[in-house]
Length: 206
Image 1 (cartoon, helix red, strand yellow):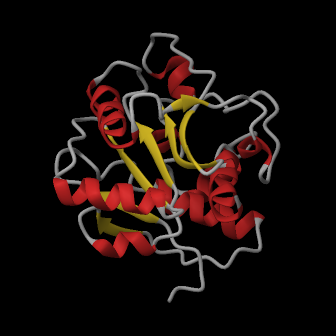
Image 2 (tube, helix red, strand yellow):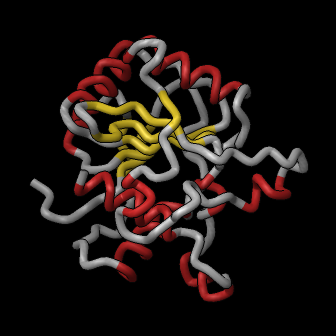
């Protein structure tokens, strides 16, 4: 039984799950820096097909390519979500019709129904679970200029279970935005991982 918070990256067979490798340690450092949560600072990588993932307080799933769950992966994902789990899913492509987006959204529709994934309002409690983001999800530098398409998403989507977010879905590429050594945060005018702290705190308390 784990008494401390730990970060689980979900490994899935179909795509490139091992992205943004420094993001978890950076986010975990922010939890240590800003909160009183007891944190295991080592990222855990657990196959989605392994029932061990069902005991994770927080799961992260990301990539650029196809998301096509095996039957065991699908079973564990659904069981985890319906039993109170929390999965943060981030599309590294930062688009709304690329391969990751299309295939992941199709998986969610197949598991939870075609209308389960919905935009969440900018006044959702997620944006006030620790720090305050009055304008909804913060924009990433990749949206502003990284891809040159000026595509900025002013919303996140979610699947809710019994009134709480169970699957939080982003097309904003937060994983890449937070993929740097935590010691480099001192060069930023504002620590951009603060929203990640909100996501974790919401997952732990909602």
